[in-house]
Image 1 (cartoon, chains in turn green, brown):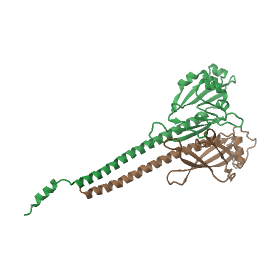
Image 2 (image 1 turned 180 degrees about the horizontal axis):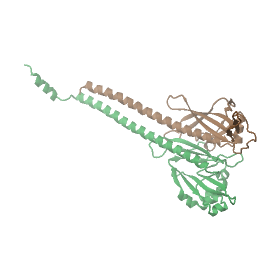
Image 3 (image 1 turned 45 degrees about the vertical axis):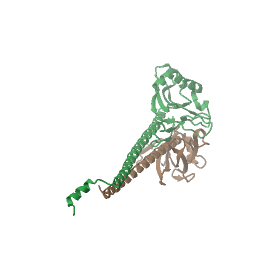
Image 4 (image 1 turned 135 degrees about the vertical axis):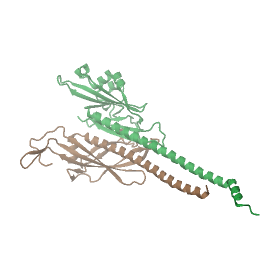
Length: 240
Length: 201
């Protein structure tokens, strides 16, 4: 005797799925989920990496523009080994170019604008711009200091190193952060001092009118898979 | 769903996923290429700044005798043990002076360790760059029209320098040289303008 069609159909629909079907469906859904997860993770990674690249590009160009622009408003360049009164007073008017030759490198760059006074003819510093690299914090900071034309410093034409040591605490307060995540790379050349700035020595044995900032950008606080690390090199010179 | 339906869905998903993967890879390549272009361009600007730092009289020697007087440019290379203070000296000659081939007629090749490994310790891939310098002197000139009226007065003596730089993307199978040009003016700041302007350009 045959079972009516309507009962057979109902029995089939109530049967559920076989173990093989469930396992195949699970395997397929697992693969699909894994694929989706991979895409999401890779997408995020690519997005974060691109964002880091853009950030580093901006930092890189920003540093280059700042330094080149500031050198245009200066006519004297002095490089000191570090941002301290002791280093400035020891290294004097020529900075490391004189004190530590032939390794003219340092972490404190001074760009000074010195002009003769219209009435007295005394050469006086009217503006100081300083770039300070802090190796512990891995940051580059900057200060700008204008010399008041009524001050004794201007009237007497106080030399740049004396000006810095005299107003050191004030300059420290004026310092603002310019860029972070900057490191000095290890140098393959042995017996070489590591520092952010380099000032070539001229034929006469004194510092030239140009300097180069050499750093490694984009190393800290980022996972290596999204990191954009690069060497940056910014050359600039005093025009007048 | 039947197995056939699931398989069809899987195939469709695979196509979409493959295109997305390709998109990610392209995005990554583009990001690296942009990084490289920025780094290379900034390096070239640094070279231009170093050329511009030369006094006019010093630059003149390289322009007039490019075979014997080259421009000494320093590149940062922390990986080079022979580079004093991490700075490698490269001699750049003037290749074309006043429109005439002069000095070595070949690019000056420089390999720089610009892109680092993820740990930042060593060079990931050396970047190949090359430079070409085209230099032109501009003398103080006064041009007059047919009525004798002065049309153009150039009081400055200067060099117009075109620094052509090229680089190769070291990643993937990109073997093309990519190009860029930076134009520099080196004026004679100790201008000694002749009483009678030099005719010509």
